[in-house]
Image (cartoon, rainbow, N blue to C red):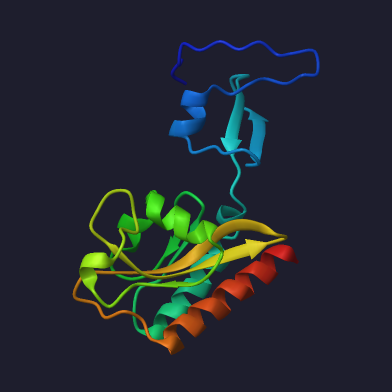
Length: 180
């Protein structure tokens, strides 16, 4: 593992402060869960925990069913990255970082549909030109865990009410699954 050059001491209660630079680059926010484990070589590793990633296989199956129903690609993301995707660009989308705009849309905890004017749409991912057509947050136990998103291009029409309803039902199902 590469050293960052930052040293922190453990206080009397066993706490350590993760430097702001590392929190910013790794998108670690106040209240985020961290998985702590030891590597084979004895290193202590702090890894951002994603309940959505734990549901990876279920999310992928559900995204596939939803994609077949809607006739368009579907992605499932946690608060930071795509954890399940469908369609021909699936391998390219998995693990990609979501855009700050999508983060903000999910944080509002309500469904989003893109405006009809393609010039007013937001980017879905940090890199690339995919636009966000529809997003519905996945909230479990009162915590925002991620969302279900439809990505598209400027040529794609904005989703209709039936599409938004189908995506909302899928998000509700995954929310309940996580709570159970």
